[in-house]
Length: 498
Ligand code: NAP
Ligand code: MG
Image (cartoon, rainbow, N blue to C red; front, side):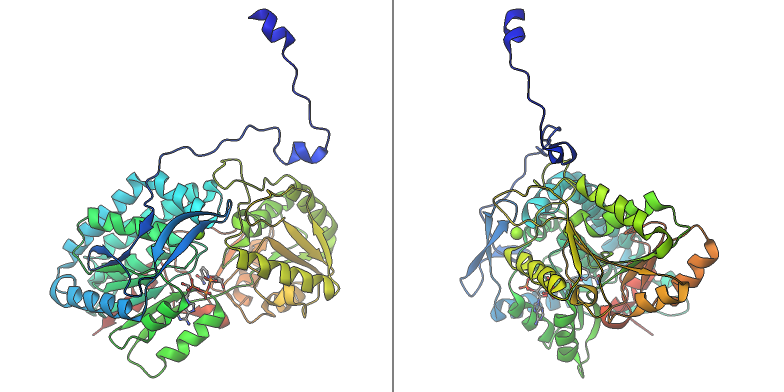
């Protein structure tokens, strides 16, 4: 035995410095929990999984491996009709008349089931969407459960939410969600709607339907009455049919500004209430007196973790001239250490880009940045051969007119500019059609108040970034949307007050 170990070859240390910084020194640590995934999923209508009337299915793919994870039924117009009908019946006969304290019990039960199965949900979320397990396990799924717990608590207290007024549910809510936080966006939509007594038809995004289908299984397990929640995966045409359906009372949409505008047009002049959570182009403002290391970590968290697939991603950085060189140097050094690869590995910082289509869009915008004269820098990670990947990227020498500064890239790409005065920073940060979020980094409290009041954005973090809690409202100014989700404010769009 001793002999054997003596003759064993020593592992050669990596010669490429990137191998050290990019984590080759760590053993892989993939999440190993057993998950249950069906080969095929039907639409979830009236408490049952059913085939789509179109007879069509589509593949949900793992973007890290390009493997098909499951076949999913594709809802058509007839299925939308069926789902809305089921939701209407459930609203009229069961959920609408049910006392709030009873509705609350169902939601608490669902929240507990999500908590119990949190690891399985996290793994499936990472497989279906490409996000690192660290994000889905530590952020997405705990927030999903927290949202259901929070709104379950409101179900029997609506009279206190709107003192002196009575709150009445609206009826059937049609909800359409994107692929970047698949289950979390479902929770943001479902929890307040159900707590207020509405029933729901939810359409998940085409690339990430699987955790929504798993949620449908939990809804069955929680014995939520049939028809209260209907989940119909499909493409944009199913989403359009849902928001245009005449028997839908409330439309809730999270997605791109482009589609949001189309939806706003579709509901104009109808009885429908609507909320739109749309795109963003958040700015970080780093002042000379900022805690630099903390700021660099906040920037990395805001744009590189989660592949920049975050509506409130800090995709623009404005840094005061006195610290610009230091910030950029430290940022590049930190970017070199990010681990890009298997989303199921606990060491991974940057997972897979959600789809081939999204990867193409990132490449197109990055090319435009180079063509327009900005200076590109990318860290040296080697990307896996299979799947969709993109290196952490930053641009310096950018101008306000560049597409990479104006348009949402939705990838790990940061555009940097410098500024001299507070006024200049505010003007530059506000020079965008969006207004979802932002970040301010400074040691001075008065500057935080001045800047956060002057920036037209729904959420601004100070000396931190991307922090969420179900009790705080979230939503946009300008072309980033209409209405608020989360907190007490998130109840209002789902009730009529009298
Ligand atoms: P998207 O293309 O707008 O799609 C969002 C959802 O709408 C998908 O389910 C999509 O179906 C569906 N859809 C497409 N066309 C439709 C139509 N005409 N009528 C109704 N529904 C339609 O957005 P995405 O690319 O999935 O998501 C990324 C965007 O979401 C980014 O702009 C991001 O900023 C935004 N976002 C915003 C927030 C926020 O809170 N403000 C949060 C997360 C994401 P398909 O899957 O078939 O396309
Ligand atoms: Mg997928």
